[in-house]
Image (cartoon, rainbow, N blue to C red):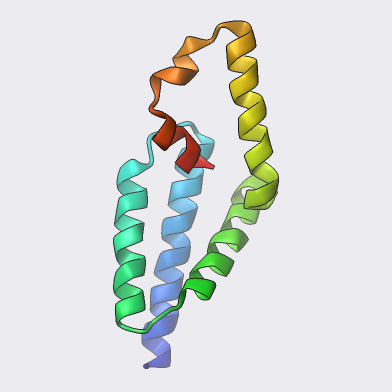
Length: 105
């Protein structure tokens, strides 16, 4: 494995995670970004530029940089948001498919 290629891969992946999380933070659809990044990660694993642990650690790091909390800490907030939408009758929240809502977290 070439160290320079690995570093370039991880820098690019970090930017992709930042783009995904910034879009999520702005309540924008990040489906295309997520799918692109999933393919990028898969290619990186095949080329042995990264492993699953590297990806998870980097994703956690970027999530904290963007949201100020870990992924695990942010998940309960999404459940609270859902409950508030139900209470207030804010059915616009549910216009987005569940799969997409859960992947924003």
